[in-house]
Length: 275
Ligand code: KIV
Image: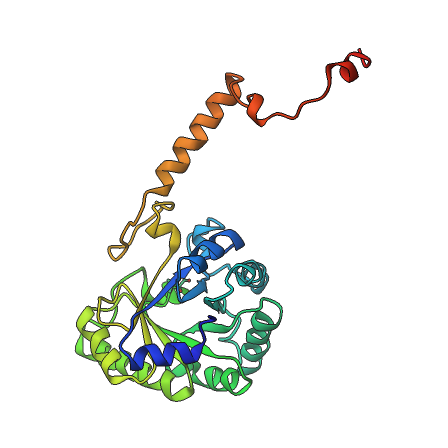
């Protein structure tokens, strides 16, 4: 059955945890969908893990639409959320509306995600009013890395914690159906989760959130440029891939691949006539 914003609301009510992973292509989305993952986030983290950028700043609307289309084809049951890339919504409510519309209409996302608190509430309100569900994102918001000066834990002082709580209430008030909380101390994320009516999805925010999200290359050991403390490695697929690539390389060079088993045949009579 398709996961929807109603499924999210129901899960919160029934205290059932929500699973979310990032994906950027059809095959991975299909595997996650078939594993029962509730929601797939086409994160702008694709800038790091798919395109090799140092951050998410350079990701474009075209990148997001391209990858969202692929994921949407594989995610029959999972709720597909597409990230709004840097400067696709900060510039104006109008831009936010147009670009959210493109992610849903061209990318076939079920919802969009954008980063920020009170400053993006007019955008959230307008997008929701246009009929597009919005997931907010507070705490460490990677598009503002140049303001933060690095990937740091957020909300540790009284002032910062108060501001985060205010941001959470603001995005809820603006109409967001969920909020991602990134790199925030567990006790603060738990408090926010208890106070909010909408779903909280944690990443580096402890076990008290309504759901969890991870970047799939991180949890599968496929990306080693940097690994945040909050990442749990569920498998070491990166090592398996490297071993398989090495074996292929060596078998091609030794002519062990392709063998009979992977080769098409033709009658000798036919081939002899060509000599
Ligand atoms: O882009 C992304 O993958 C994200 C998650 C880290 C929440 O925003």
